[in-house]
Length: 187
Image (cartoon, helix red, strand yellow):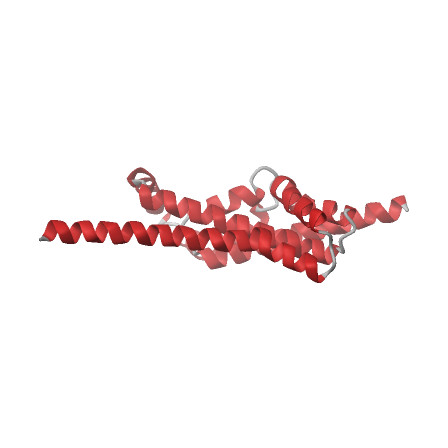
């Protein structure tokens, strides 16, 4: 009887994992595609320009704001669109990392060893998440590395995403100001 019960529990865990994965995929696709297309429709921005900006964001990260301005998109709208894509990428990376830790005892053990080594640094657990604001500015780490750093240190997802988005908005605003400055010099 206990074997049947254990089998049922394993089956339920597996189905809950699929449900969790499906919900995460829906959220990510909403932030990466649906929200930008909806905002683009509200501001009468052609869909090819929105799709190009989404692609540019995935490749060039915060620098994509300059591409959006080059496409004729208002700088504030370009920042909003790239931020939506960035949030989707952050959520996707955090969910993928969680999936790895749940399915691999090796990864879970590695995270436990990191937690044991860092537990004596109390400030890291309280204020370390704030480090994500400047980390997202670092080329090569930026959008794809910051969520992994947040996951490795096991910071809470919502504060981590808020700090990453804050850094992203600052970087995007700086890029937009630079792009507008270059455009004003050239015209």
